[in-house]
Length: 462
Ligand code: ARG
Image (cartoon, rainbow, N blue to C red; front, side):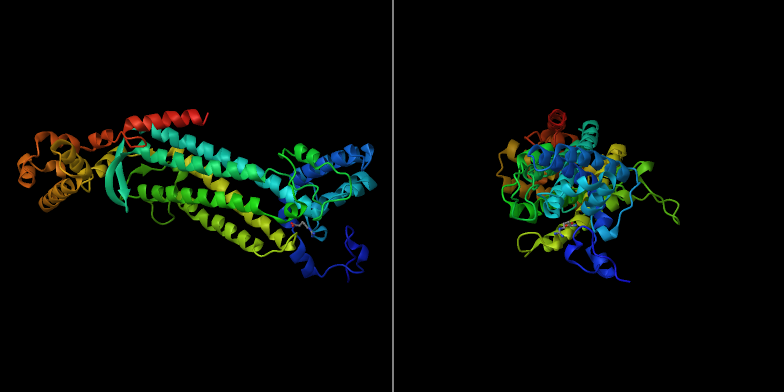
């Protein structure tokens, strides 16, 4: 049986589409998520059409009211989406016609689905920037809580995942506060640039109707209309910027997640995840697995994947709109959903986890972690050039290693056999507490600096 032609554009068509044509063409399965943005855009457009005298006030009122009815049907799960009607735009308009009658046919004056989808998607991505910002803020607060509690808890700082120098727990937590602050500024920056309205660009060339694009832009919370109609309907750089910011944020999340996986292992025991954020094993009763951290670590795969996918979709497309661009949405939806999930889970895990101060401190003292402090002492107290101090310290480390002890376990006589100028007070700098307390340079790990940083960020995040 041949289907009848589409009611929205079927004037020049004798027959309807092949079933597979319909399947490849339809986006309603996913773009129904744009329903509220679509209806907001249409309501703004209808009000503008009336204000400029393009349609009557009574038609605009009927359209605007009817759209609210359609929205409540959709939100109430009381709406029959149709694949034959392709996308959210035509599904809404077709239902509007059933609700308000002929007036619905005037809504699409001076508009195209091309500017319609561009405005819907911009509004949706703009909301996601705000959602990511809120989730990042909550995560920063969770980190600040940890940093404040453990401003002076000593732990090993690593380079190459080898113990390098002692640092403080608070300092390590605050490193992520800084990273997530930059992520927030990237979303804010992208949001600012995307906050211009494509509505009124129509299909690609603008329109001969006397529309007021500033009015619709303002009604939708945009800073103004986009300046070029071809650009307005054909670029998706705003979505790419969102995905770029999301990718970098997911990189940060994955690094933190990896640390939590390592830290919660039996070999490290730096942190204990709460029961709420751990899972057991169906076969090994002793297990407490950090599944959420592992999943957060993995989310970068689909988020960066979305970034790559949309970049490839957009590459080489001639201006203006091409249907290729319908492939923009699922990627961004998936990336945004998973970013939000990962951020929220990370905030929950961080807020609930308990640092094991004893393990942290014991690990901080391993691996000759205060060797740099010893070298610095030789420079400061004996006036040695740093290179020579480095060499002397290296010999002392080798001696301790040979004796199977740590640097503070060497006797003064043993030290003096390497450099006769070494005095008893060298032992003051070999303790990990003294080591971190001495790192008072701006941005350094000393508890005093960490407390300053916590206070700074508490205020900044108010
Ligand atoms: N569903 C389409 C999309 O997501 C809407 C725009 C369709 N425009 C067109 N000229 N066929 O991109």
